[in-house]
Length: 389
Image (cartoon, rainbow, N blue to C red; front, top):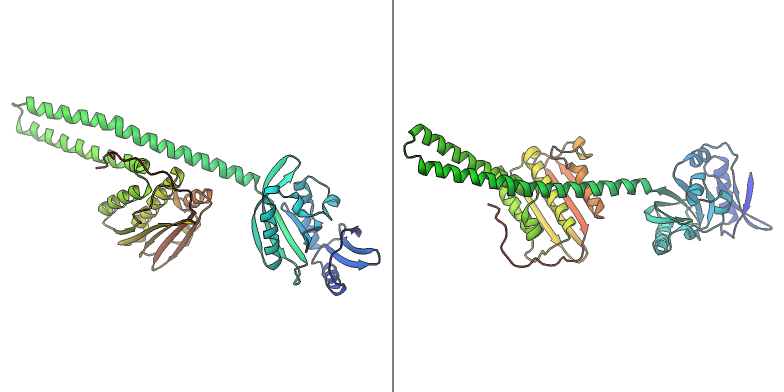
Protein backbone atom coordinates (compact mmCIF):
# COMPACT_ATOMS: atom_id res chain seq x y z
CA UNK A 1 0.00 0.00 0.00
CA UNK A 2 1.33 3.39 -0.97
CA UNK A 3 0.06 6.57 0.61
CA UNK A 4 -0.25 9.77 -1.41
CA UNK A 5 -1.17 13.08 0.22
CA UNK A 6 -3.24 15.51 -1.86
CA UNK A 7 -5.23 18.65 -1.17
CA UNK A 8 -8.14 18.24 1.19
CA UNK A 9 -11.15 16.17 0.18
CA UNK A 10 -14.39 16.68 2.02
CA UNK A 11 -15.25 13.03 2.53
CA UNK A 12 -16.59 12.38 6.00
CA UNK A 13 -15.18 9.52 8.08
CA UNK A 14 -18.31 7.42 7.55
CA UNK A 15 -18.03 7.83 3.81
CA UNK A 16 -14.32 7.08 3.92
CA UNK A 17 -15.14 3.89 5.80
CA UNK A 18 -17.59 2.93 3.06
CA UNK A 19 -14.91 3.42 0.43
CA UNK A 20 -12.48 1.41 2.55
CA UNK A 21 -14.98 -1.45 2.68
CA UNK A 22 -15.40 -1.20 -1.08
CA UNK A 23 -11.63 -1.49 -1.52
CA UNK A 24 -11.50 -4.53 0.75
CA UNK A 25 -14.18 -6.17 -1.39
CA UNK A 26 -12.32 -5.35 -4.62
CA UNK A 27 -14.63 -2.55 -5.71
CA UNK A 28 -12.24 0.41 -6.08
CA UNK A 29 -8.53 1.17 -6.13
CA UNK A 30 -8.33 4.14 -3.78
CA UNK A 31 -9.92 5.65 -0.69
CA UNK A 32 -9.72 8.85 1.34
CA UNK A 33 -9.42 9.03 5.14
CA UNK A 34 -8.84 11.84 7.60
CA UNK A 35 -5.58 11.54 9.54
CA UNK A 36 -3.97 13.92 12.04
CA UNK A 37 -1.71 15.34 9.32
CA UNK A 38 -4.67 15.90 6.96
CA UNK A 39 -6.73 14.06 4.38
CA UNK A 40 -4.93 11.31 2.50
CA UNK A 41 -5.52 9.12 -0.52
CA UNK A 42 -4.47 5.47 -0.39
CA UNK A 43 -3.99 3.65 -3.68
CA UNK A 44 -3.47 -0.08 -3.93
CA UNK A 45 -0.90 -0.41 -6.69
CA UNK A 46 0.21 -3.84 -5.53
CA UNK A 47 -3.19 -5.23 -4.56
CA UNK A 48 -4.30 -8.30 -6.47
CA UNK A 49 -7.84 -7.10 -7.06
CA UNK A 50 -9.94 -7.87 -10.16
CA UNK A 51 -11.03 -4.25 -10.47
CA UNK A 52 -7.49 -2.97 -10.09
CA UNK A 53 -6.21 -5.36 -12.74
CA UNK A 54 -9.04 -4.43 -15.11
CA UNK A 55 -8.57 -0.68 -14.80
CA UNK A 56 -4.79 -0.83 -14.96
CA UNK A 57 -4.88 -2.87 -18.15
CA UNK A 58 -7.49 -0.75 -19.89
CA UNK A 59 -6.35 1.01 -23.04
CA UNK A 60 -8.61 3.91 -22.09
CA UNK A 61 -7.40 6.44 -19.61
CA UNK A 62 -9.28 6.11 -16.30
CA UNK A 63 -9.31 8.37 -13.24
CA UNK A 64 -11.20 9.10 -10.03
CA UNK A 65 -11.79 12.76 -9.25
CA UNK A 66 -12.88 14.49 -6.07
CA UNK A 67 -15.61 17.13 -6.08
CA UNK A 68 -13.14 19.80 -7.22
CA UNK A 69 -11.95 17.76 -10.17
CA UNK A 70 -8.63 16.78 -8.60
CA UNK A 71 -7.25 13.38 -9.54
CA UNK A 72 -7.23 10.93 -6.62
CA UNK A 73 -6.42 7.93 -8.82
CA UNK A 74 -5.38 7.35 -12.43
CA UNK A 75 -4.39 4.26 -14.36
CA UNK A 76 -1.25 3.85 -16.47
CA UNK A 77 -3.07 4.52 -19.74
CA UNK A 78 -4.14 7.98 -18.60
CA UNK A 79 -0.65 8.82 -17.38
CA UNK A 80 0.73 7.72 -20.77
CA UNK A 81 -1.89 9.78 -22.61
CA UNK A 82 -0.90 12.84 -20.59
CA UNK A 83 2.82 12.08 -20.97
CA UNK A 84 3.38 12.11 -17.21
CA UNK A 85 4.12 9.69 -14.38
CA UNK A 86 1.20 8.45 -12.29
CA UNK A 87 2.45 10.16 -9.15
CA UNK A 88 2.59 13.50 -10.98
CA UNK A 89 -1.00 13.20 -12.17
CA UNK A 90 -2.46 12.24 -8.77
CA UNK A 91 -3.25 15.36 -6.81
CA UNK A 92 -3.44 17.61 -9.88
CA UNK A 93 -6.58 19.03 -11.49
CA UNK A 94 -7.71 17.24 -14.65
CA UNK A 95 -8.94 20.64 -15.83
CA UNK A 96 -5.29 21.70 -16.33
CA UNK A 97 -4.69 19.03 -18.99
CA UNK A 98 -7.56 20.20 -21.19
CA UNK A 99 -6.98 22.58 -24.11
CA UNK A 100 -7.62 26.13 -22.88
CA UNK A 101 -10.45 26.81 -25.33
CA UNK A 102 -12.23 23.62 -24.18
CA UNK A 103 -12.05 24.23 -20.45
CA UNK A 104 -15.47 25.86 -20.10
CA UNK A 105 -16.98 22.88 -21.86
CA UNK A 106 -14.99 20.58 -19.58
CA UNK A 107 -16.31 22.29 -16.44
CA UNK A 108 -19.89 21.90 -17.61
CA UNK A 109 -19.30 18.27 -18.53
CA UNK A 110 -17.71 17.60 -15.14
CA UNK A 111 -20.65 19.21 -13.33
CA UNK A 112 -23.10 17.15 -15.37
CA UNK A 113 -21.05 14.05 -14.57
CA UNK A 114 -21.55 14.63 -10.84
CA UNK A 115 -25.29 14.17 -11.32
CA UNK A 116 -25.26 11.31 -13.81
CA UNK A 117 -23.45 9.85 -16.83
CA UNK A 118 -22.16 12.55 -19.19
CA UNK A 119 -19.84 12.45 -22.15
CA UNK A 120 -18.41 14.72 -24.80
CA UNK A 121 -15.40 15.38 -27.00
CA UNK A 122 -12.62 17.60 -25.70
CA UNK A 123 -8.97 18.16 -26.55
CA UNK A 124 -6.18 17.07 -24.21
CA UNK A 125 -2.80 18.82 -24.19
CA UNK A 126 0.41 16.84 -23.97
CA UNK A 127 3.51 18.99 -24.36
CA UNK A 128 3.00 20.61 -27.80
CA UNK A 129 0.53 17.97 -28.98
CA UNK A 130 -3.25 18.40 -28.88
CA UNK A 131 -5.10 15.09 -28.68
CA UNK A 132 -8.82 14.84 -29.56
CA UNK A 133 -10.42 12.75 -26.81
CA UNK A 134 -13.74 11.49 -25.58
CA UNK A 135 -14.52 12.13 -21.89
CA UNK A 136 -17.08 9.93 -20.13
CA UNK A 137 -18.00 10.94 -16.56
CA UNK A 138 -19.90 8.81 -14.03
CA UNK A 139 -20.66 9.63 -10.36
CA UNK A 140 -19.11 7.06 -8.00
CA UNK A 141 -20.67 8.30 -4.76
CA UNK A 142 -24.17 9.40 -3.91
CA UNK A 143 -23.00 12.71 -2.44
CA UNK A 144 -21.25 13.64 -5.74
CA UNK A 145 -17.88 13.77 -3.99
CA UNK A 146 -16.19 11.16 -6.21
CA UNK A 147 -16.53 11.04 -9.99
CA UNK A 148 -15.06 8.49 -12.38
CA UNK A 149 -13.88 9.47 -15.84
CA UNK A 150 -12.80 7.48 -18.89
CA UNK A 151 -10.74 9.28 -21.52
CA UNK A 152 -10.42 7.78 -24.99
CA UNK A 153 -7.85 8.96 -27.53
CA UNK A 154 -9.77 9.71 -30.75
CA UNK A 155 -6.73 10.41 -32.91
CA UNK A 156 -7.09 7.22 -34.99
CA UNK A 157 -10.85 7.62 -35.23
CA UNK A 158 -10.51 11.24 -36.35
CA UNK A 159 -7.90 10.22 -38.93
CA UNK A 160 -10.23 7.55 -40.28
CA UNK A 161 -13.13 10.01 -40.39
CA UNK A 162 -10.98 12.54 -42.22
CA UNK A 163 -9.94 9.88 -44.74
CA UNK A 164 -13.56 8.81 -45.22
CA UNK A 165 -14.56 12.44 -45.75
CA UNK A 166 -11.86 12.95 -48.40
CA UNK A 167 -12.83 9.73 -50.16
CA UNK A 168 -16.47 10.81 -50.25
CA UNK A 169 -15.50 14.20 -51.63
CA UNK A 170 -13.42 12.48 -54.30
CA UNK A 171 -16.33 10.17 -55.11
CA UNK A 172 -18.71 13.12 -55.42
CA UNK A 173 -16.27 14.97 -57.64
CA UNK A 174 -15.77 11.86 -59.79
CA UNK A 175 -19.54 11.48 -60.17
CA UNK A 176 -19.73 15.10 -61.24
CA UNK A 177 -17.00 14.55 -63.84
CA UNK A 178 -18.59 11.36 -65.18
CA UNK A 179 -21.96 13.10 -65.39
CA UNK A 180 -20.39 15.95 -67.34
CA UNK A 181 -18.62 13.57 -69.72
CA UNK A 182 -21.79 11.59 -70.35
CA UNK A 183 -23.77 14.74 -71.00
CA UNK A 184 -21.16 16.51 -73.14
CA UNK A 185 -19.27 13.77 -74.98
CA UNK A 186 -21.71 10.88 -75.32
CA UNK A 187 -24.65 13.24 -75.68
CA UNK A 188 -22.96 15.06 -78.57
CA UNK A 189 -22.11 11.78 -80.32
CA UNK A 190 -25.72 10.64 -80.07
CA UNK A 191 -26.87 13.98 -81.43
CA UNK A 192 -24.48 13.53 -84.38
CA UNK A 193 -25.85 10.04 -85.06
CA UNK A 194 -29.37 11.48 -85.04
CA UNK A 195 -28.37 14.08 -87.64
CA UNK A 196 -26.75 11.41 -89.82
CA UNK A 197 -29.86 9.25 -89.69
CA UNK A 198 -32.00 12.23 -90.70
CA UNK A 199 -29.67 12.95 -93.60
CA UNK A 200 -29.80 9.33 -94.78
CA UNK A 201 -33.59 9.43 -94.67
CA UNK A 202 -33.65 12.62 -96.76
CA UNK A 203 -31.18 11.35 -99.35
CA UNK A 204 -32.31 7.74 -99.44
CA UNK A 205 -35.44 8.17 -101.55
CA UNK A 206 -34.93 4.79 -103.19
CA UNK A 207 -34.57 2.86 -99.93
CA UNK A 208 -36.80 -0.13 -99.51
CA UNK A 209 -39.54 -0.20 -96.90
CA UNK A 210 -37.42 -2.62 -94.84
CA UNK A 211 -34.48 -0.22 -94.77
CA UNK A 212 -36.74 2.71 -93.92
CA UNK A 213 -38.13 0.63 -91.08
CA UNK A 214 -34.59 -0.03 -89.85
CA UNK A 215 -33.87 3.69 -89.98
CA UNK A 216 -36.95 4.37 -87.87
CA UNK A 217 -35.91 1.69 -85.37
CA UNK A 218 -32.40 3.12 -85.15
CA UNK A 219 -33.78 6.61 -84.61
CA UNK A 220 -36.02 5.39 -81.80
CA UNK A 221 -33.13 3.51 -80.15
CA UNK A 222 -30.87 6.55 -80.37
CA UNK A 223 -33.60 8.69 -78.79
CA UNK A 224 -34.05 6.13 -76.01
CA UNK A 225 -30.28 5.92 -75.35
CA UNK A 226 -30.14 9.74 -75.25
CA UNK A 227 -32.86 9.82 -72.60
CA UNK A 228 -31.14 7.09 -70.59
CA UNK A 229 -27.78 8.84 -70.75
CA UNK A 230 -29.38 12.12 -69.70
CA UNK A 231 -31.14 10.43 -66.77
CA UNK A 232 -27.99 8.61 -65.62
CA UNK A 233 -25.98 11.81 -65.91
CA UNK A 234 -28.45 13.75 -63.79
CA UNK A 235 -28.68 10.99 -61.20
CA UNK A 236 -24.91 10.92 -60.84
CA UNK A 237 -24.89 14.64 -60.21
CA UNK A 238 -28.00 16.70 -61.00
CA UNK A 239 -27.05 20.05 -62.54
CA UNK A 240 -29.90 21.67 -60.62
CA UNK A 241 -27.99 20.96 -57.41
CA UNK A 242 -25.24 23.36 -58.46
CA UNK A 243 -27.39 25.91 -60.23
CA UNK A 244 -30.62 26.14 -58.23
CA UNK A 245 -29.90 24.31 -54.99
CA UNK A 246 -31.17 21.40 -52.92
CA UNK A 247 -34.89 22.17 -52.98
CA UNK A 248 -35.08 22.28 -56.79
CA UNK A 249 -32.89 19.20 -57.20
CA UNK A 250 -35.01 17.18 -54.76
CA UNK A 251 -38.24 18.26 -56.48
CA UNK A 252 -36.82 17.19 -59.84
CA UNK A 253 -35.62 13.85 -58.48
CA UNK A 254 -38.91 13.11 -56.69
CA UNK A 255 -40.92 13.85 -59.85
CA UNK A 256 -38.78 11.47 -61.89
CA UNK A 257 -38.81 8.82 -59.16
CA UNK A 258 -42.61 8.90 -58.90
CA UNK A 259 -42.97 8.62 -62.67
CA UNK A 260 -40.58 5.67 -62.95
CA UNK A 261 -41.66 3.75 -59.82
CA UNK A 262 -45.38 4.59 -59.68
CA UNK A 263 -44.87 5.36 -55.98
CA UNK A 264 -46.70 8.50 -54.90
CA UNK A 265 -44.40 10.89 -53.04
CA UNK A 266 -45.74 13.82 -50.99
CA UNK A 267 -42.97 16.41 -50.79
CA UNK A 268 -43.09 19.36 -48.40
CA UNK A 269 -40.40 22.02 -48.75
CA UNK A 270 -41.04 25.64 -47.70
CA UNK A 271 -40.80 28.13 -50.59
CA UNK A 272 -38.13 30.15 -48.74
CA UNK A 273 -35.92 27.13 -48.04
CA UNK A 274 -32.93 28.85 -49.65
CA UNK A 275 -29.41 27.61 -50.40
CA UNK A 276 -27.04 25.61 -48.22
CA UNK A 277 -23.29 24.92 -48.40
CA UNK A 278 -22.53 22.51 -51.25
CA UNK A 279 -21.41 19.69 -48.93
CA UNK A 280 -24.69 19.87 -47.00
CA UNK A 281 -26.75 19.95 -50.19
CA UNK A 282 -25.04 16.94 -51.75
CA UNK A 283 -25.30 14.99 -48.48
CA UNK A 284 -29.03 15.62 -48.08
CA UNK A 285 -29.66 14.88 -51.77
CA UNK A 286 -27.81 11.54 -51.49
CA UNK A 287 -29.78 10.64 -48.36
CA UNK A 288 -33.09 11.35 -50.13
CA UNK A 289 -31.87 9.39 -53.16
CA UNK A 290 -30.82 6.39 -51.05
CA UNK A 291 -34.01 6.37 -48.98
CA UNK A 292 -36.29 6.48 -52.01
CA UNK A 293 -34.26 3.73 -53.67
CA UNK A 294 -34.74 1.59 -50.55
CA UNK A 295 -38.47 2.35 -50.55
CA UNK A 296 -38.73 1.14 -54.14
CA UNK A 297 -36.54 -1.95 -53.75
CA UNK A 298 -37.43 -3.22 -50.31
CA UNK A 299 -40.44 -1.64 -48.60
CA UNK A 300 -43.35 -2.63 -50.85
CA UNK A 301 -44.83 0.78 -50.05
CA UNK A 302 -47.03 2.60 -52.54
CA UNK A 303 -46.63 5.96 -50.83
CA UNK A 304 -43.86 8.03 -49.33
CA UNK A 305 -43.72 11.34 -47.47
CA UNK A 306 -40.74 13.70 -47.43
CA UNK A 307 -40.58 16.79 -45.24
CA UNK A 308 -37.69 19.27 -45.23
CA UNK A 309 -37.58 22.13 -42.73
CA UNK A 310 -34.99 24.56 -41.44
CA UNK A 311 -34.82 27.23 -38.79
CA UNK A 312 -32.07 29.20 -37.08
CA UNK A 313 -30.85 26.14 -35.18
CA UNK A 314 -31.31 23.04 -37.29
CA UNK A 315 -32.15 21.47 -40.62
CA UNK A 316 -34.53 18.52 -40.37
CA UNK A 317 -35.38 15.98 -43.08
CA UNK A 318 -37.95 13.24 -42.55
CA UNK A 319 -38.58 10.44 -45.06
CA UNK A 320 -41.44 8.09 -44.24
CA UNK A 321 -43.12 5.15 -45.98
CA UNK A 322 -45.93 2.72 -45.12
CA UNK A 323 -44.12 -0.45 -46.17
CA UNK A 324 -43.10 -3.66 -44.42
CA UNK A 325 -40.16 -2.23 -42.48
CA UNK A 326 -36.42 -2.93 -42.46
CA UNK A 327 -35.00 -6.32 -41.40
CA UNK A 328 -32.88 -6.24 -38.26
CA UNK A 329 -29.68 -7.14 -40.14
CA UNK A 330 -30.04 -4.17 -42.49
CA UNK A 331 -30.46 -1.73 -39.61
CA UNK A 332 -26.88 -2.24 -38.48
CA UNK A 333 -25.60 -0.76 -41.71
CA UNK A 334 -25.34 -3.36 -44.47
CA UNK A 335 -24.34 -1.38 -47.58
CA UNK A 336 -26.84 -1.13 -50.40
CA UNK A 337 -26.07 -1.97 -54.00
CA UNK A 338 -25.76 1.76 -54.66
CA UNK A 339 -22.70 1.87 -52.41
CA UNK A 340 -24.17 4.24 -49.83
CA UNK A 341 -26.49 2.33 -47.52
CA UNK A 342 -27.35 3.17 -43.93
CA UNK A 343 -23.74 3.10 -42.81
CA UNK A 344 -22.69 5.47 -45.57
CA UNK A 345 -25.56 7.84 -44.76
CA UNK A 346 -24.67 7.87 -41.07
CA UNK A 347 -21.01 8.59 -41.85
CA UNK A 348 -21.85 11.47 -44.19
CA UNK A 349 -24.19 13.00 -41.62
CA UNK A 350 -21.79 12.47 -38.72
CA UNK A 351 -19.13 14.42 -40.59
CA UNK A 352 -21.54 17.36 -40.64
CA UNK A 353 -22.16 17.00 -36.87
CA UNK A 354 -25.67 15.73 -37.53
CA UNK A 355 -27.69 12.71 -36.47
CA UNK A 356 -29.66 10.03 -38.30
CA UNK A 357 -32.52 8.22 -36.60
CA UNK A 358 -34.16 5.12 -38.02
CA UNK A 359 -37.58 3.94 -36.79
CA UNK A 360 -38.99 0.86 -38.47
CA UNK A 361 -41.71 -1.70 -37.82
CA UNK A 362 -44.28 -3.62 -39.83
CA UNK A 363 -46.23 -0.37 -40.34
CA UNK A 364 -43.40 1.36 -42.20
CA UNK A 365 -40.06 3.10 -41.85
CA UNK A 366 -39.15 6.66 -40.92
CA UNK A 367 -35.67 8.10 -41.45
CA UNK A 368 -35.06 11.39 -39.64
CA UNK A 369 -31.94 13.45 -40.31
CA UNK A 370 -31.04 16.46 -38.19
CA UNK A 371 -28.18 18.81 -39.06
CA UNK A 372 -27.05 22.04 -37.45
CA UNK A 373 -28.20 24.95 -39.58
CA UNK A 374 -25.26 26.61 -41.36
CA UNK A 375 -25.34 30.20 -42.48
CA UNK A 376 -27.59 30.62 -45.48
CA UNK A 377 -25.59 30.38 -48.66
CA UNK A 378 -25.94 33.13 -51.20
CA UNK A 379 -28.89 32.85 -53.52
CA UNK A 380 -28.11 31.83 -57.10
CA UNK A 381 -28.12 34.52 -59.71
CA UNK A 382 -31.09 34.56 -62.01
CA UNK A 383 -30.55 32.94 -65.34
CA UNK A 384 -31.46 30.03 -67.55
CA UNK A 385 -31.42 26.62 -65.92
CA UNK A 386 -29.91 23.61 -67.68
CA UNK A 387 -32.33 21.34 -69.43
CA UNK A 388 -33.23 18.22 -67.45
CA UNK A 389 -35.75 16.80 -69.89
